[in-house]
Length: 290
Length: 288
Image (tube, rainbow over all chains, first blue to last red; front, side, top):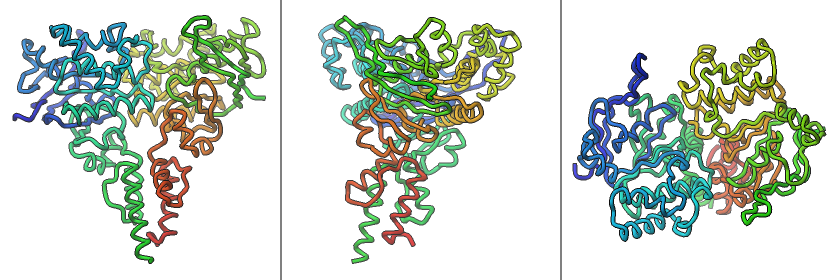
């Protein structure tokens, strides 16, 4: 199991009810999940499907009621290991304003490594490197509250990068951002995966963010309902709709056209791919005519 | 006469400081009764500042806001009246829920309007029904509801004041696809059954494409584009220039056109796309 970084084994979890109230139902139910090192996984699910809880279980913010979560083989229920676990898996949340603690960008990024007891010269290096990795180096002296949402979220990601995690779990990091901020953050995440081999688990509501992942999981009612490539998952339009999700509009359009008799290849998910496919159909036709 | 109008509306943050920002510059808009206007723009384009002017929450640096032709800053009484006639619902309004029960939270606005207990009750129930808030929730704590449910309660709190003009800032942000569709259709039903005027502020084109009668694009504190959904969405290049996203569907057609294929590019919904592509395939003999 050398190449599995996150290993969920029959994991169940429920939040605690207030005193003298009936216990709350399980919100994660017997989940088995292995995330491979260096992979890019997207988790989709409607509000309340259990996907955020899964994020918190991944670095011992929460521990399972039953079952085990292992991070590089370390049991998240073992409190002695929580330091090493959180150094390995960093979690980024939805609202950047809740994650920024300092009044200068570079101090905010230094907060994590300082707490890990990293020597000062090494911190300097890591902070500069992390800010460069997210494209925010030139803002190192700025006040975080004056940055845009997308910039703040990238600072929050830099704060994680500075702890040199092997894996980043991002819980709807783009939900509060405008289209440009969203693009900035997604480009950053993809680059960290591609260039630094950081394992990414991206939790999102936006179907478009899933189209170029290695693997897509769909959660519903605390369980993993679908698990496969983006192509395989987005073939299940009916199942997705039943659980309050949809397929990307371009994928829906392509599927409709195929049903109408247009000989398009299956599993088209992006505008670029559809344009290519249509162009080549028309091209073949031109050849046939001439 | 338009129900809501702005004349050369300008606003400056931090005048006489090094941080002076011209947030709005000579904005002229005119909104007719019963319209559903989408106001879109990237973060920092001035759309939220504009919205805060429309019920007198912020006073213009220069220019006017007119309600039924009358300046809302003409007198204290006029500004006070504008607060009730124009209802503002901020981003993530569920963060503003505070009462012990859903009922009391929705009732907070109408109670402050000095209405009788019966009138307040009537309004709470009416607002709740527009947002499909079940009777059984009314006695629950708002904090026991899900995110999408809380959002509906918060919007009901504004509706209960029965404003003639309702302004919603990013009403569907952070919700899943089903939640987004639900809020959008509840708002549209409310408009149709009450004849209210509605402004939706958003950075998502998709939020306004289906229902808006008119779209304004804000950029740099000014109205950059204005027109019907068709007119505004037709010009993808202009939208990108103003920092907005072009719908994925539209991208397909822009890309085909760039390769020399004769297709329309004013396509932004799946239905239009299907029609246009089938026309193209028939013309080119791919389909019979």
